Length: 407
Image (tube, rainbow, N blue to C red; front, side, top):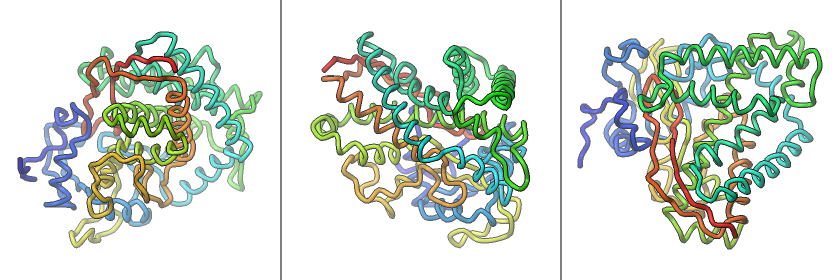
């Protein structure tokens, strides 16, 4: 069926019911790669204004890398007008300074320790799932590893983790009408996360516990230390982005592998293939749907004029299926090489700080899962959370019921 771009409405949440609408974005890449979305007065979060949609790999990559002409201030998504406190909505020297201070916590020694912890958690998580036999993979396996790894980075006590990540999960998914927590609770839940971030940062200022947050609360440069507000914003960003994106890549990755039994068998026989498979999982799933940018000065993108103050949306899953950059882009192939996807932003100053850790978490989890199982069987229909423009920017597989057989 041919899709007419004039009929496309990216604010219609129903088009995300089965995941990212790749058919729509194929039409956009072919017919209008720089497309002005019509005004959307029915969506209060977007303010009724039109916005520009970028769907091709090259345009998305180039805008990502030109942080002076395309600003991040104002927030990552159309429904979120940020205050310039988080890395995702910060520009210029403020962004460079905070990113440098945060990066100082990820020393080679700390990175090695985190990898060892990731392996230990993966073993425990998979063994716990095997003891149950049948599990809801998204929450009981895929979410557990990134959740505990982020908690380890931030030094969150074990007894607080289940509560905190339940609050974060509800905050993200309450926009879905089928989620039991209503959207009206979203601001209240966000306040709880900020309050907890303030509390734990304050505790670590008094007595550090050897984690990265303990390093950050004392890290300083010629402008001093990060403020309490900056630390709270970083806490929110890391707990949300660091856990949600990796969870979605792991759960969607298993769904892909179960649909490709020959590729799954190849990974069991040759674990060295897992590193390349992880890159293909990341490309194919692209857990971040889009980021927003603001045009700083009148310019052109692929010959199309855009004006100062206009909003751009960069759709990473679409760029990662661009046939001009990837051969047979809609084919999942663990042997794909090269695989220069843009799921982490495609370079530039806003390239994902957690890219290395996310890659290692995905690889380690699947290594331990495939080593410890002889069979993984889908025992129910996968379901997605309903996402749309103005809502959270993550693609979320909500349920993936499976039965695990021990090796």
